[in-house]
Length: 443
Image 1: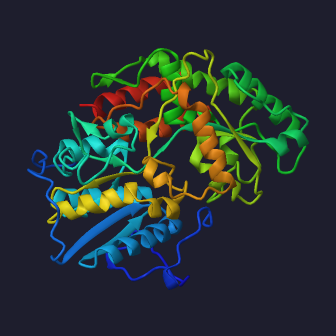
Image 2: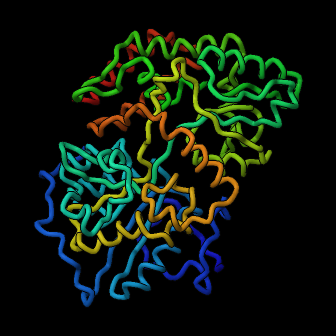
Image 3: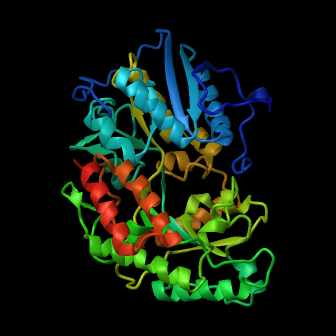
């Protein structure tokens, strides 16, 4: 494989083959807005194979994701020699800063990665095309769970299609727990039992250097909060409004106070010292609740932990609140001069088995069963797939609908939760602040 250097926030560039000899990356080998209303193509006609076409494609991610996309694009360009794909990528924050600037000037990339948190802004303000006329025609959806397709909807039109899905999981470092003399959890666990387990881990790990804690403060996790809401019979968004109260949020953040008082979680001061390393991957915590497809990322940490996947806590087995979250979504810019070819490219990235083989589980579990057929699962992939299959009949919750301000709601949730974790704000004060921010974001 040839050596390539990738630059964060890189400009679009004419790409050449990223892999020598046509080699395919082995799975698991690499660790404001303004505008007019959106439009829908009148007819999803086959694109002209004789026309010379250039598509700009942008995504957020690291060099590992870039290598995979470049390998996939090599295949698409070989099959469609009249099409040239120019690429650009950046970290998540810089990525959206660039997209916001382009949206204002109507110069968005033809195809770009979309996140559920920003779908309503881009779809509702007419910056991306409605894909409905392409779905089932150019973009095949037979192999995609209907809930994932519908997750791309804004005002009853589909503006983004998921290339992957993910679910939250509780990741345990079994060998570390055994070393600490703590029984490895098996099966279901309630919230109070989980908190007690984390405290026990911290007590047993206090004598080690560095100390081992039960987990990070899970009350900072925006998507986990939504699962907890579902367990309470509530929804995050209901008819465009918040589906819960300040008291509900304060109750959730009050768990942080207990976790801190019992020493169950890593202190915020220590967590802030980690730079580019996950505490779970460094084996300084023995458990964390995160996306199941992050399993390879954590196991590639400096301690190379051996992790197992179980469901997050719940108090009622008939009400887990769990749902499939659409992972990396793809959208077509309204300003694209070649929307038909853009749709062909999206279908390729979402459904092609060779693309599935290249990405493996790095984007999450493939949304498309045809893409999944290309995966030669390694041990970690198999572990993720087995977990997904095990919990498939326990997904009784739903992902929040795409609404304006969802990204802001997530960002402020994380920021304000830090004050609770530091003890700088009470749960009640933090909940009041967040609700004030939310009212502005949802206007």
